[in-house]
Image (cartoon, rainbow, N blue to C red; front, side):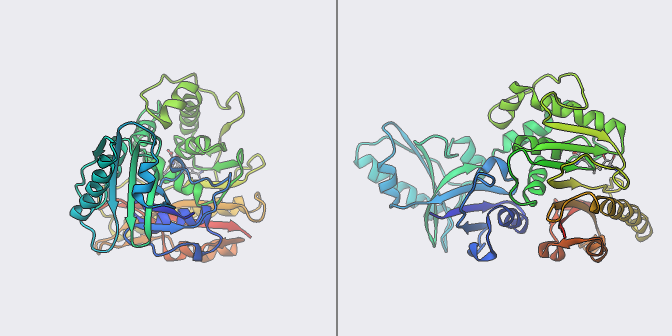
Length: 395
Ligand SMILES: C[S@@+](CC[C@H](N)C(=O)[O-])C[C@H]1O[C@@H](n2cnc3c(N)ncnc32)[C@H](O)[C@@H]1O
C-alpha cells in the first residue's frame, strides 16, 4: 500500500515534516511534483498517518488496490457523494469532471443514487473537500485522486476550521508576542522525528503556549518556560482551558468556545508544567525528550528595517538563541532533537536575511540537519519577520 500527501503552501517544509516522521531514507519519497508526495510508510504507533497531527499536509490518501468503480461499488447502501481531484499530466477542471461523471453514470446504471461534488479546478480545494464531508470519515462520501501513478482514496483532510477554533478560542492571547499558527507548532514538533506517547516536549520560549498546546493534543507531555512571568501565567491558563475535557473534544472536531478554568502552574494530571526562567541560564527538570520552540523573534515590524536597525535586532536575537543552545547542550542526552524557529527579516530585494549561526551551533555539540543549511523558511507573502526553521540533534 502506498500513501499520498497533498502538500501545503510551502512544499519543502511539508516534505521535511513527512521525512522526519516516516522516512527511512530519502528514497521513500517519489517525485514531489504538483504539490504531491508519494511515500511508502510504514506508519507506526508513534508516527501514524493522521491528518490531525500534520500542520504541513492538506490531505492524506492511500492507493486504491482496485479500479475506482470497483471500489465505489463496494461502498455500503445509500446515497454516495463523490469528488475527483485530477493531478495527472494535462489535468484541468474538465478532465476531473469527466472522470467524476463517468463514475456517476456507471453507479447510476447499477441503481445507486449519486451526488458529484463540483470541481472549480482540476483538484478540489481543502475547504471544498472538508465542507462536503469528503474527509474519509464517512464511507459513502469519497474523494478519489487521479495521478500518473494510479488512483488514490482520501483518508484525511486538514481541518482548517479546527485550527482556527483552537487559535482564536484560547482565553489568554497576546498580539505582541506574535501568534504562532498551531499548524506551524505541529510542524516544529513533527520535525523532531517520531516520539513515543507521553514523551516530554520542552518549549523554553513558550509565550502563550501554542507549541505546548499542540504537544498535548498529540499525546505528549508539555513543559514550558519563559522569561516573562505574564507569559507563563497565560500559558498555564491556556493549557488548563485546553485540558478541560469538553473543550478538548470540541477543538479537534466540531466545536465552539469553552470557559477558561482557573489558572495553575501545573496540571493536576501532570500532563504539563510551566515555569518562569531565562532560557540562557535556566536548569530544566528532567527528562526532556525533545525541544520544539519559536525562539525570540525580536520586535514585531510592519516595515522593512533599515540596515542599522536590522544589525541591532540580529545581535539581540542571536545572543539569546545562542545563549539558550549553549545552556541547553549540557542538559540533554545525545540524540535529543532540538527544533527552533529563528527570525529572518525581509530585505528590499525580496530575499530574507537569516542569522548566520549554524557553524557556531555545530561547535556547541549539535548536528545541523541538511535541510536547515539550505533554509526552511516559513513565511506569508510580504511578511517582514519570517521564521527560519533550524533542525538540530544533540551529538
Ligand atoms: C516569539 S515569542 C514565542 C511565542 C509563543 N510561540 C507563543 O505561542 O505564544 C518569544 C518568547 O520568548 C520569550 N523570551 C525572550 N527572551 C527570553 C529568554 N532569554 N528566555 C526565555 N524566554 C524568553 C518572550 O517572553 C516571548 O514570550
